[in-house]
Length: 244
Image (cartoon, rainbow, N blue to C red; front, side):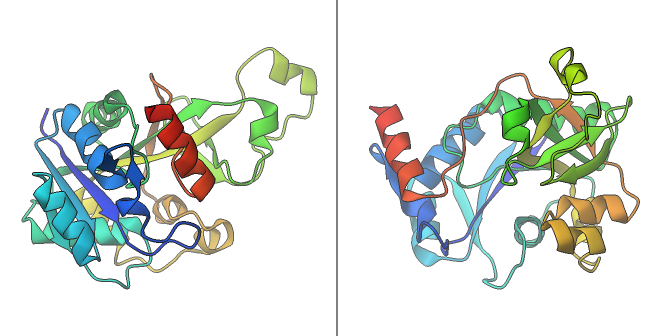
């Protein structure tokens, strides 16, 4: 299966400045993400950054990296610029692997790329089952989808609303969206031209722009649950403890 992994890695982070260069054991976070991406069998792995130091670290580790603009408002915008810079065709399959998930299972990358290919789709993503307590957390983005595995909606709210609570004890009803995407370069080209959509501006979820513009997002329940991404110094400390 031919697909390309692009990892957006911006230097600035409100809660953890210089996050991609944070050390986890004897490697930087961004190096660990690159190694996980490589294990997926991707045709190419490229880091899209806005920082010279990140660029140098990635290249010294033997991976490809390109310098992108600092003013991108989303990871998808940065990925499209990178795809242009490395000369990918419009029908190329690109997997967006977040730069703050150093332990992402390589199987997840393969799964989302395969989902896109299987459905001859332009965009795909993953989700995992969660309990009612986690579903109430606004930081956990929930996803609902139809019988054809097409996403209906993503929200920070607890969806779906379960009118008869005992039903949620009988079957899986809540799913958390996993922030990994596969898309064709042509979809990204359209995405960057569309203005921010109404629901996107309310929820602060860029995938809603795709749905509001009438595009389908295929979604599958992941086979291997990924560890949480790293957003804070406490997360980084846990990651280092995990490595030990």
